[in-house]
Amino acid sequence: MKIRVLGCHGSQLPYHNTTSFLIEKNILIDAGTVTPVLTMEEQLRIDYIFVTHTHLDHVRDIMFLADNLYYAKRERPLIVCSSRGIIENIRRHLFNNIIWPDFSKIPSAKAPLIKFEILTPGRKKILGDWQVRAMGVHHTVETMGYMMESKDKAVLFLGDTGPTEDVWKVARTVKGLRAIFVETSLPGSMQGIADKTGHLTPVTLAAELKKLKDAKPEIYLYHMKSQYAEAIRREIAAIGDKKIRIIEDGQVIRI
Image 1 (cartoon, rainbow, N blue to C red):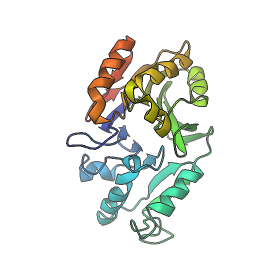
Image 2 (cartoon, one colour):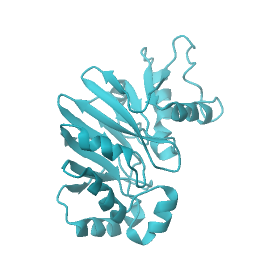
Image 3 (tube, helix red, strand yellow):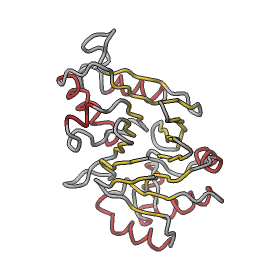
Image 4 (spheres, rainbow, N blue to C red):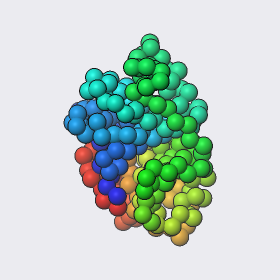
């Protein structure tokens, strides 16, 4: 299982891209940063985007990717997957012919560039060798995490989240869970705003990881607000868990 980190930051600055993970060659988890990083040839290979939530740092490049694929004369549709509420918000607020052209009706309603697929939380979707399961987490807007399973290996991608429960219950039961990608946006000194905005700090991250109990996957941290990166790194180091790693843009992780 190859995971390429296209972007992993909670704020955008030079050399700090917003969230998107490319799995193998054709599956994206979120699309905060896609088109500035991938070549046109690589963009044409993408078949699915699994959206965690509709904040711009996670969906912005769906619009630019759609535009690129249309003018490259791609014939097969790009499938954008998420819960019903998230899909409705993408359609209403992004592909609405005001913010961006509605590529779910271009070039025609019968043969659109983008197709939206609604996922039922908790139910597995089969994609070739992959099984994908959406699960709700706690954020300021409706947000999904995704359990990706293939060939007896599983990886969990949490979208933006504060303390949550159900996803950890599932994680404890999944055999072959090798890795969890989880946010840690702010340092402990900003716990109040982290709680208000539905994000984790190193303190709340440590409490969340205890919910895994006997499960021992690798933990990959992302979504740090770049201005507070050094403080977050010091606090993560103080936890003393060797399985916790902070990822960087451009990194390739093999599971």
